[in-house]
Image (tube, helix red, strand yellow):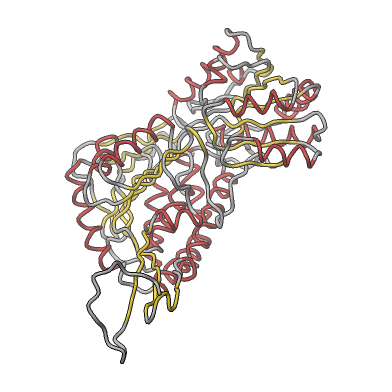
Amino acid sequence: MTSTAEKTQTLTHWLNNAPAEGQSGRSAPVYNPATGQVQAQVPLASRAEVDAVVQVATAAARRWRSSSLSTRSAVMFRFRELLSARRDDLARIITREHGKVHSDALGEIARGLENVEYACGIPNLLRGGYSEGVSTGVDVYSIQQPLGVVAGITPFNFPAMVPLWMLANALACGNAFILKPSEKDPSAALFLAELLKEAGLPDGVLSVVHGDKEAVDALLEHPGIAAVSFVGSTPIAQYIYEKGTSHGKRVQALGGAKNHMLVLPDADIGMAADAAVSAAYGSAGERCMAISVLVAVGDAGDKLISAIEERISALKIGPGDVAGNEMGPLITREHRDRVAGYVASAQEQGARVVVDGREAQFEGDGFFLGVSLLDDVKPGMNAYDDEIFGPVLCVVRAGSYAEGLKLINDNEYGNGTAIFTRDGGAARQFQFDVEVGMVGINVPIPVPVAYYSFGGWKASLFGDTHMYGPEGVKFFTRSKVVTSRWPDPAGSRVDLGFPQTR
């Protein structure tokens, strides 16, 4: 934990494989959420600074795209080994600035590592197709080439994993990558940049630029940037998508979520309760894949409420760097108070507060909030309609599978969902029926492994491609088809007709 007497650190950008001091004169505080104390100041880049970063990246991209696939793969392999060896150091940085407990930070890094491992196979992932003899003496083949300079704008809740979702594939594909991390917890991005330098990534291929809306708009409008990848809330995702595409960029923008977990009467109630508590309150609910609504069908509701309430009473909440704690603070004081407001409004609008996290007491000035469990929540209540992004689990009662399914499909979000049941037929029907991008069957947080791709439907995604995996490689490259013919003894002749394959 950061001492109140500890000197405030001044962070930097990262340019040409070295720290770069901020030039704008503007900065933002970085808090330790467990103490409420400012521990660092992060510079906020101006448009001029963003332009300078793009110029460096443009020159580096020309060199990097000419490097061999084996060279890029070797850098990724070395990066993977360094990241694995230093994961504990990175986890401590995440805990200090985000607040999540150390074990959760290690889990985030492990899932990020999967994406680096996937990118290590880039020679295989970028294989094209070849058709010999499509016409007399003519062959056709396809190749995948990098876009040039691409950017990633990442959220506070996964300061290591989400950057790794983006940069591993982007760099392996031969692009130069500009990372704009959240200004709330920016140090993880700088740590990754240092490891990539040590792994042998050339100067200028990865840049880290901190900033607020001015920097974001500069990235979205800059003609030197070919594509932007984003993860954040739905309103901002829509803004990123519309502004970026209007400036001719390829954009994938992942937005918010309201993930429902459907529990049928035949489900293993203990298993479902364990899953609900883990998925709703892990990382203080600050996950886009958190379960925030539990849809209890039939008589499953009362048994689930009782089992969840029992499990909540045993949760250990406190600073993330204290062994044994299972949940840390929220990211800011303002966000904590906003989340608490949803518990109050739910009660005013007719929901039953089974467990009230506002009653939990904590020492010090950290941004802590206890977990809340709300029953009899209904559509139209603020706690149901909005993405709370905090440790609040809403229970909605449904009379049937069809009624529960309709609740999920009627929701504006479509990021993740889960069904808990012993009935294989019901599970199979659910995966067919549900209008959500990622589905779990007795799995509460169905984040795909790295060789699939992550992405939701509806208001949870703006753009045509999901993130990382095969679609990540597709996003950071463009295809080129080559039709070739070489001189042969038969010679050639003038023919003004349209080319035919014969």
